[in-house]
Image (cartoon, rainbow, N blue to C red; front, side, top):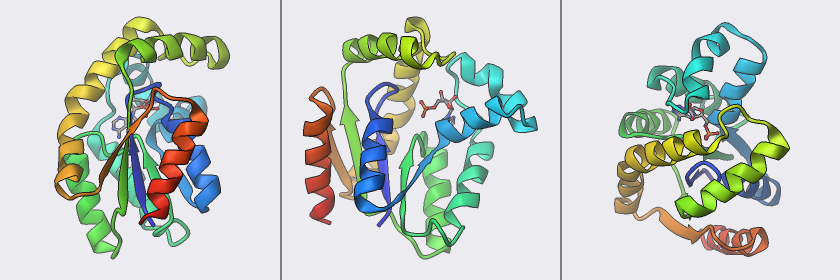
Length: 188
Ligand code: AMP
């Protein structure tokens, strides 16, 4: 089983992915997390993307597509992953479609956590005190939300047309969301 989870930054994608990974024995592939590690470890890639990421802009498709290719083609992850933060635009969708076809895999369900900008702002300000992420401040949060809305909408439409999309109300408690997601996955 392969999944994708969508939601604006601060929607709880990370928390929900952690839950799904444990419950269904999958691997989480979070492009944001992988890229942040690159920056933390001061790799060549990390230095290249650090300014871009701290301003809330997206990283070059080619870089992200290549990261995903390396993971999805690894036997260990095949048919056992949940994508978080990828694909973010139609170019990435096409790249993923081709990649999955080439290794006989497919996406089984696409979850969208739906959350308002007001809730995101509140959560981001709470998270900033806890995690100290450099891209977490209100102005950047709004920019990331708008970038998300603008670039991800056509991506979500793509999966809707394929009848893979399930929209989950992300305004509720973590446990309620866990339960709904779990029930949806059990139906696959
Ligand atoms: P996230 O943790 O998913 O909100 O991602 C944090 C940041 O990482 C984003 O604002 C982008 O700069 C970068 N990033 C993560 N995933 C992608 C992606 N699929 N394409 C381009 N940039 C990405």
